[in-house]
Image (cartoon, rainbow, N blue to C red):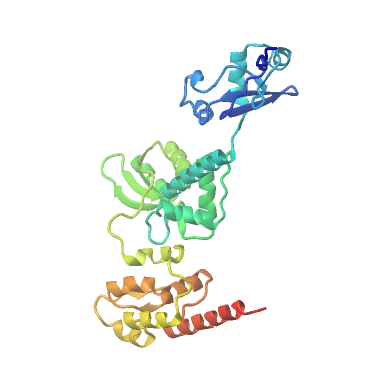
Length: 357
């Protein structure tokens, strides 16, 4: 007796696919698409439908390979044309993604938001832009979570407002050239004062004088409306303005607060004393070193720490790092001896915790 292989005819099993699902009139319809192609189609990057759909067939369950019934298609869409129905599901349906794909999309959008924040902000104290890694670290500090249903630009503006509550950061100003008739110059200057705009140059030659100023981006729409009323013209010279040129170590002192500590907590107090002695940073010689040439002062520790080399080494010392932690808690700085005693007390408490029952 011969045995024949029986294969199901009404099932088409598909694996490694991206499923787009649409519920309509109480029925569930699904289509099988290639991975990472649905978003490209919806954004307009991909134009070829065959590069998006694995097959122009409508399913009721793709994972089980169950095809949708024709009467259900007619009841829900008014037609049984599979191509038209696939297009509607592709545009309006919900994309089912796996955990790794969702994590990859959120990570990519998080990076996009951080990039936008970096381009639109500066340090309010140094007037210089933050690095992308610093922005990402600050976003983690405020426990920011990406919303995939919102645009990256809208979320970036929300992040900037939240960062301004905790860190020295602000929107970078725009540089504009405002050209108005001579009779309207007083009105324009009054408006610029109301907006706290910084006038960098003023050219009053000719019948249409111009003013170059820097203002907050939030006042741009109001400025544009005022220029229309004054029969003037507005030119954007720079979307984001920040300080250029060489930077001094003092400019990045505050950024050390947000940098993770690279030293281990197991450093002994004796090593701290040796470092302080080697770098010559003590309370006694702080007052005498102020009279020397090219001495640098650490505002975090409120002490003079010597020349540029000693200044750089000071940022690596436990004294400076301990005062940074105190500064974030809005506590006054400690001297070298006070810091040494404070660390000894901390080590003693840690030892008691290890042996507590």
